Image 1 (cartoon, each protein chain N blue to C red):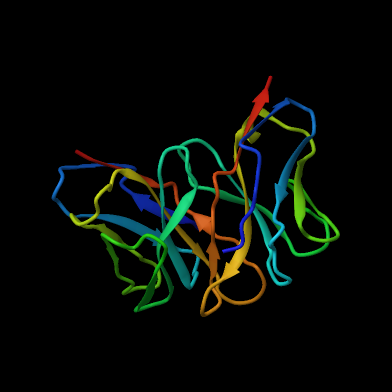
Image 2: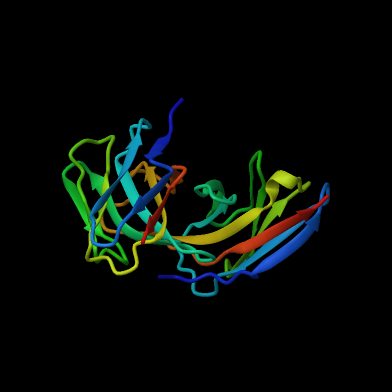
Length: 114
Length: 113
């Protein structure tokens, strides 16, 4: 089955530690995205990538880093510089050409930093 | 970013139709209207999208006002599995053509048995 996988589902870290969240897709999509969701809020875009080896900052990129070395993979690192890292993180992918293609979302990773 | 306005919450009974409204008075001529929904503790899923004409698919219908300043997502017969947060989003095309979706708080739909 085609889709997006994120692992792990729950992640716990101590303050001051960097942590990397995994996102893999087998949909052959060019574009991938990372969003953050806080309780009761909508999603906010952290980073996005339209093609391998290229990515752009979204609305709240500070304290995060990404890489896009393979088309299928778009890992997100939450660094110690991120002031409020506890949140629900969602990865998505989409095609990039044609009319309005939908984004497909993964199941999310819930990160708790104490 | 073009903004949308939705009611915070709505309630419906099972088996009845649900009309979820969305206002987008600042929509531009090339903005698509997307709807996504998010079940608790899950990622959002695409529901439907449209530009000018009304649209139907297996999940829902989308009715778009003639002036495009508002739209309505229609669930023809609500089920308990339709209880979710529904987001109305305008497509914002970033440099290069991929889609930047700007999510508001959405409408939380409660379906009563």
